[in-house]
Length: 629
Image 1 (cartoon, rainbow, N blue to C red):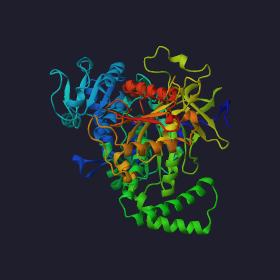
Image 2: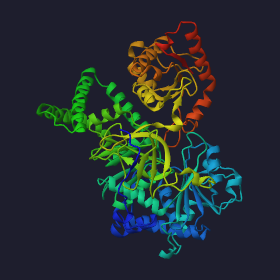
Image 3: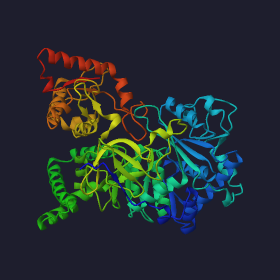
Image 4: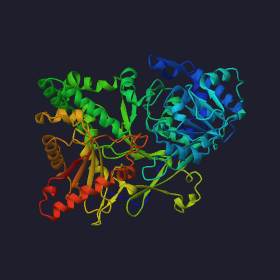
């Protein structure tokens, strides 16, 4: 059901949830309520977990804020954070906004040219950087205007006369600094942060949010998830340049939960096993990797045990389906589920600890089959939907109200309506006022203040929002068809050993796909071929492996309409990465970058498909052409 009128929601006033009006207020109030409770836990020298109380968090943030003022940080100054997740990141964040500054998060794994653009556009007045490797990503011209540069680890710097201060020295001096008076705190309408769009289709754009908007967003999240409460454990592992991760840390602050800081994202599952979080936040790519890891572990077990696990999972899947549909499982199924859970399923989901209530996924759509697979194990993943231009998440599934294939119901602070073609539009106090330094800002909104998100969707009869595609990602073929690639890519990633997938074909006669392979999983899945991953740069896929993959692709694509079936594939030796520029910091595909990088190979693939069709030798339309790069 597609609705074109406005979908009104009751607006949430911040005062309904928190009395705090600014980010420093949240920390101060929490420190007053539970001073000795653990606020943050971090790993000292990468080893044991060390606690920091709310009282100490507040004291250190205040002292650092005073030290920043003495170093020249004025109200409205921009401080750039170029460092991985750490205790120092969080302290500097709170100190900056307490001093009236504006925090600009910079992703350490970003390419230097993108970091240069962001730093230049935001006119940084100060910088926090982890080490000399990262500071060298910024040009001297961008470093010279800085009033001060805090460096966490000592090392050579590009210019000898930079106003550099090492973190230990800053902490030592701040401990002697007189704490500022409450009158120096920022106002709710003061700017708190500038975030930058992911730049999936072009240069990143800056978005400025004030304290009141961020507090509203956090209050909205807490209201949506009453399970977030005092004593809850959270793992902070997504880049803190990502505003959503910072907001979740603030949610934990507001309710009195404990946040565990994980500096290396590759070690997040190690941390999860120790921390045992109550709620876990990730992106679809993470859950796909988690599922692949579970599958690999199962594949290493004896055949008889694999059969038992499959049976238990099937029982769990049938039971979970009843839960989703609101129907009552039979007594026999309930008993079978209890036994399978006790003997098998609880051990599988034990990878996430024993306290987990649910997981949240955002940034990109999750394949429904993967949501169902996890739910069969007893792990509930709730999809949410938001965009950089509206700080309050637009819609969220909740533990007591969710629907797979949807992103949930809209949050009270938002008003959502649909345009003539189903394009989603939003209005509310969390909406941005235009891109930073954008002369065309007012032309980005309708006369009555709605912003077109660029996404297409529909509301079902129960009010759940289903996304149908993104305008910038829609592929219009030369035949005039408009195709959303996301669902096709999800179908491809349903093949156990397909790691990443991107479908393209704008202006072309047919679609093609770019694939990366999980070679370990492929080796497990294709034991009968008895071949291993090619190693040489010029080496082609062995014929048995080539045929095995083509056969699987053909079978999976038959489930799609003919016009959505890619006619050819490029299998890439190496996966897409942030460092390579193919992924954003939250692991979304930079489609334009990827297409430009492989354009010559894509053109050759299309030429071969056209030749096969023209010469009538084309099993290619029943069996896709596949090249290995």
